[in-house]
Image (cartoon, rainbow, N blue to C red; front, side):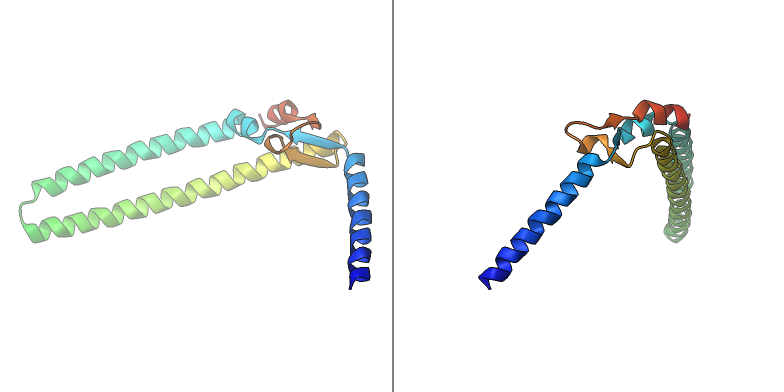
Length: 148
């Protein structure tokens, strides 16, 4: 049993040593993804679009409140509230679904640009800047230029 543990320890040390050597031999780039995202014109356009849609929903809510307040019959008032709640839920779900699809598309686009920049400059690995304490070549500005 003790021999097996010693063998396992030696094998583990050799594997870790090989991994460490290959990691140091790799050409590593870092990217500040948050900076790339905040600089993206696509992201800015999506934010503006979401703000406009939020304004539309607020107008819808205000109109619904006025319409419901104008009705005096309790049953009709409840039916109207239910109708507006269903419409509001449908609008919000549609808005969220469209936002998610567009955001996914932008993320894919940015990831593709990062990969293209890394390959063009001969990098083997790209790591998010927030994870790296020291080292690596920062390609953030190159990615930002390519995204625009």
